[in-house]
Length: 257
Ligand code: 13P
View 1: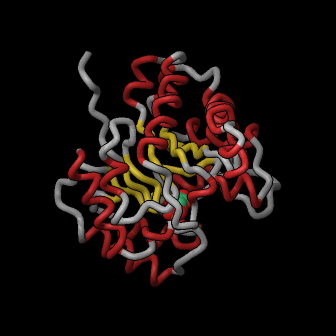
View 2: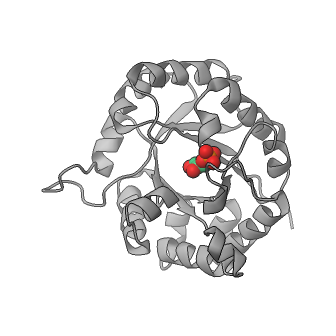
């Protein structure tokens, strides 16, 4: 059987960092540092207030833009919420859904993640569905139960055409912002399990689905991660805040592409 070629995706999650000026400058530096054409898809996720500014800075470049979250309703009395149509309007093509910081700090449940992914799909935004286990869950051997449970909640009962429009990011919670990266072969094993689970739903779409790794990805550990056959890119936090650390990560993905 031939191995499907998935175009790697490297996404920078800027989290709650960078105002208008810094976001615009960083977007320009990233776009300016990429080869043209770029064999890897590159996406940045600024704060809401910088989305329109970053979209303008990225116009005509190969770099795409993601939101860090969304609400599942399109409009209405939902103070503080931002919906998929508004994110499209601001220039997003991707949206992070179910990031562990949303789950842990803002009480987001699997059911919410599913509704958010559905709202994104309804408006043709590609949801990057984030899954991952805590340290406690890993230590008691529950990694796959937790991760596959999150995958089932977000993906279960969708048809194959939806799967074509989605991305998964495996981000072990204990590796986020800690400097502790998962061992490449451990991450690979989880990626394989995720793909196998989705293969039961839609074999061809699952073979083409991109599964990113996130959690302390840095220029000095990304090469080994990207050598794993089922790691199709990276979701980068801290190292995405400067072009000097983000671009080498993209370069490593280009080497694999
Ligand atoms: P760090 O790369 O800072 O560990 O963050 C990972 C992450 O949460 C990306 O979404």
